[in-house]
Length: 121
Image 1 (cartoon, helix red, strand yellow):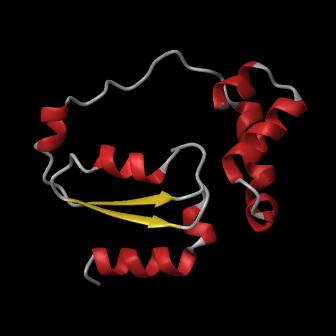
Image 2: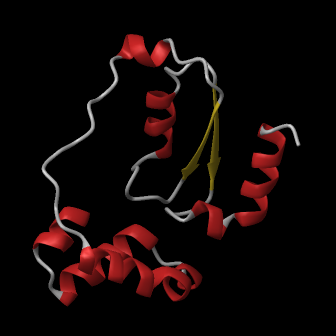
């Protein structure tokens, strides 16, 4: 979706991508909509992608990971499927919250509380 918006910089395409990324939360649109639109306007599509990690590489990562999943996030898709995919990491803590993509904004109190717990502060 982001690549489409940068390759076809039409207002209608950008507006659709903003709605896709932010969902229906008016606070997110008001707070970050202009910023997101300016990012899309200045983005040049890239053909390079990061190399994916193998399943064996994922299983050997022992660094603690805290992953937030939005249950209404269209970018990630189904939170249950994302949770199952991420569970391959041996030291991962997955938190699914009722949110779109801007979890730290929509669920800021829960996110902040969980980060503090995760960091043992």
